[in-house]
Every structure is written in C-alpha cells, then in structure tokens.
Length: 154
Image (cartoon, rainbow, N blue to C red):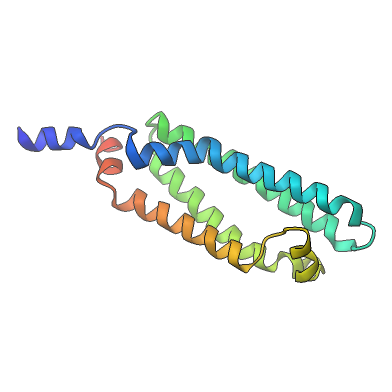
C-alpha cells in the first residue's frame, strides 16, 4: 500500500515536468520565433550585398518553423498525457540537438562568412553548444525522472 502511495506522489504534470511542458509549448516557440524575426529584419537590407545570406535565412526560417510546430506538439502531447508523448518529446530534443550541429555549418554551406553571420546575431558555436546541452539535459530528465515514468506508465 505504501508503494502505491509513493507512486501517486510522482504522478501528474507538476514540478520539472510542468516547466518542461511550459517551455515546449510556449517559451521555446516564442524564443525561436523572436530570434527568427529579429535575425530576418536585421539581415534584410544586406541580401543584395551578401548573396548567400537570403538563402541562409530562408533555410534557417524553414527549419525554425518546423521546430516551433514540433515543440508545441511535443509540449501539448506531454501535457495531455497522450500515448508516446515522452517518445515525441525525446525526438524533438534529438532534432534540436542535431539541428544545432547543422547550424554551425550553414554559413559555410551558403557561402556566408561566419563573421558576417555573427555580425547580425546569427548562431555561433557557443549558441549551438548551449542548445545541445539544453536538449541533452531535458532528454536525460525524460529518461531518468520518476515523475515521467509514473505519469506516463500504463
């Protein structure tokens, strides 16, 4: 009986799990969209000068919009306790981890010097490392947390 009550303590979208849901559903998407709009507006006057810059911003924007939708979907799935919600959230964190690696190389792919991209506030190695750490920590949380295990167990 005591074991059953201990399990109930860990059930529900509370604590760190609630913070994760809020982050995935609201904070991350708003942050990504804000950064996308700021970067787009800052670079727009320089599209003629730096030819690959438009393509870089376009591709980054497409990926960002996809990640925003994926983030909201993962957050809502966790919040509503849907089947495979944890798996979906883990896939989201793997996606942003690997996209962070890709963003390191995007300026080179589109022929935009790293200095020019940084000048406009574009992603750099430090931003990528911070994002990869963020994704890794939440992935580990989803894997190891008692609250996640008991809340999403059948």
